[in-house]
Length: 234
Image (tube, rainbow, N blue to C red; front, side, top):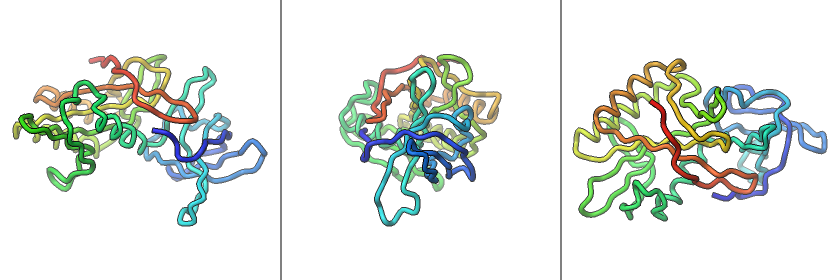
């Protein structure tokens, strides 16, 4: 998935009200950018961090910049826009580039199912059970090389696991796909200390047939694409 507009570097001044970030551009001017991430962004919103913004000239948008990346001192990147995984994965699923799901030729996004829920992707193929795929963006890393989810309590995420379990009970495939938006991690684990209820719900869902896939990403100020499968701990 290529960014629609070339990204520009900046320094983070502060993130506030979850969806707003004051930033300083390289010319010294200060602007407010939209932060498309409702999570805690633990470890990613430190003042002075080097970040990358996507400009836009859409007259319907109040804010003319969107915060897309954090660049770490190591040269690695983290993608902070939680809408990116679905956009990047739609391309990969449509091109049948995810081996575990490559047998499905029909990919539909945001399909209603369960109790007032929408599945990120519903995959269908004649002769195969339907595959319900829920996607989560992973940006937290508290140990070198280890990505974790979630970075804050997620009752919505727990509900999704319950809905996926119901799909397996009906004879469908149900897949929880964690997309790690960090280039400095090669392993994944649940952050059970942050949200014990989510970890417990995942354990129950996994025991009842919900599949877990963890994939990495390749990130640059030009694009974000799906990388290889990562090891899942626990």
